[in-house]
Length: 464
Ligand code: PLP
Image (tube, rainbow, N blue to C red; front, side, top):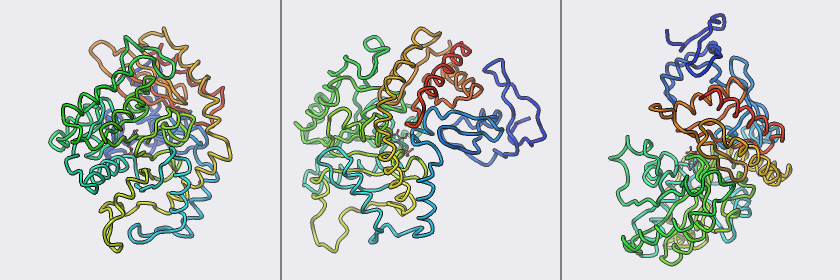
């Protein structure tokens, strides 16, 4: 019988394939109607036990069946200040009473202007304006549209090509999956993909860089593929290159030393815009406000989302250099300059959550805290080298990934088993493909980080 509806009193135990222990069935939740995103719906609905979350506080979730889970990925990379932070809760509550919605077009509200200014203050040097969206996917598609439109505004209508990178995750919009490089995210939608896109090679090479700590020393030359592509296509045909400074969703793929710098040089040489998708790395994950600052490379546009509101209310955006904004500020003053925007761009409640998030990051010194925890996470996670099935370990900032050898003939199963055993051990890890990713809250204690890695060792040993 499918376990899509199991009552509290129905306490039968449901064994999952992954281990010797059993996971308890979930209580009182009818799972049938909900089509879950990026989820194995049928598998989940057969085994929802301990995978339905009821509450969260600080660095922990509690499931509907009463299990307490350490939040190893800060939600989906978005809640590093801990859940239910009183200052964010209070700001959101207050905002709902004061101004719950304000039309985004032709109108504004004070807090969105001051938020844009605060984001610019933190942004890489020389960036000056912010366009707000509601998600990372929208931020990426917005940046791509701005890039194309910018060149057109300047009369360079030949610049129609975009360059992404293998293994990149840029969300799920048509633009994002076109420049993205994760095959399953593209294959099902092949007829919709933009045709004018090329991809740089990804920078992961196990032979040359396995078990690197932080930035690998090998791989700078991979950026030269941009020169080759630009030359082959005609440099004046390329509008923009988009990369995540650190590829998060593909499993913490860290840029080789010198790689991003070289991309910047090539873009400069050919008049190509460089876009950093910092949806994961923005607002502290790498111990700096943005990856751009961590790596010392200033792009022309930065996409952000996630941490900007600590995940409490959806918000995203694109930060641009003044030249880009200024290129649009032409024509009659009464005319709209950019035909783009969302009903909820700069939503007042998201704006209030973002202000409170930035306050908390500053007041609690959370960038410093992330920097302080980085060596501890690095040390702990690399201690897993030599564990059964561990093929690679990567880390930077407060992010780390353990890549596993696939079980013969069963790709993805080993990581799923580790994930499920993790839940039994009180840990909510993130698994995709063969990789377990961790990006713990900045408010984690040292003991919690050590425990997160100790329990991963237990789970990996159990998943052989
Ligand atoms: N870009 C990057 C680098 C991401 O990691 C993500 C989400 O994980 C996105 C874009 C898409 O963001 P969203 O899921 O908010 O649309």
